[in-house]
Image (cartoon, rainbow, N blue to C red; front, side, top):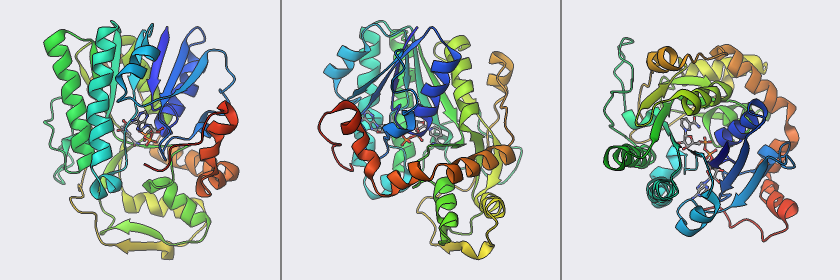
Length: 341
Ligand SMILES: NC(=O)c1ccc[n+]([C@@H]2O[C@H](COP(=O)([O-])OP(=O)(O)OC[C@H]3O[C@@H](n4cnc5c(N)ncnc54)[C@H](O)[C@@H]3O)[C@@H](O)[C@H]2O)c1
């Protein structure tokens, strides 16, 4: 099969590509990424020379580039997005452009080319907030009620994917996963930021009282869930993908323990506007229909991730001093990155 993967230079996309090339030795993968501040080709340095892998720098909202490069693809896996809630609160415009308009371009292109499987990779954040009752969890029938501009933009893209199935019979599948933890995540996000600050002995900012809870999953388990959806999922369906529910405080305490640091590094700061209190996921459908199970407990996922960041100081250094943005020029000899959008 030929896979057309968008956003493959980001956190989950790069883990997905590495996994797919190894788990599916007959398949080829094309990675399309605009290389915004969140795109880092060093995430894929070990597969860059693989003859079954190709990279093209392009914008998912560019219809002509998508048409050129998607031709011949059997499967489209659409990860590319503006993905940071805090940035969406400061400026929603890039989120609308990439997550809504970009998704519409992807759907139109894939439909016109007769793509057989299209995966819209989305988040549980589209469902909004849950009450504290532990019995209440998100599932495939939960209504969308996004709280942040990020979540609203993802929900819009997901609605489009469903509408293309209903209107045109286009074989789109939407997945909603909880929060991912794992290697190669840009350290503006909660867990890598906490690890990086703790390693440097710096304060770790935590919103509000830190008791917001999320469903956490190792990125490898998310990637394996996507494999199950691609291979056995049904067109037009939704699958939610979950992990273990933990509060931000639980996670920080665990990270600090793993690094041998004290809780005095925790610094509570003013809460994020519109901050959802609780997400939790009932993922029985993907377990029962597709036979997927997570392989890592949350404790294992966190331990592996902390160890990875500790062991990859060069990767981290290149992210911190922004030299990761020169990788494209070194590797592909073209003009430098288009700046921090
Ligand atoms: N991180 C999570 O915990 C999580 C959980 C559930 C779902 N998701 C979803 O998974 C997807 C990937 O998330 P991530 O955490 O890997 O994000 P990320 O920010 O690490 O990566 C996003 C990638 O998309 C690229 N990109 C951005 N705009 C683009 C454009 N216009 N054209 C082409 N490429 C563009 C960036 O350069 C980057 O490489 C997103 O759609 C996100 O909504 C993330």
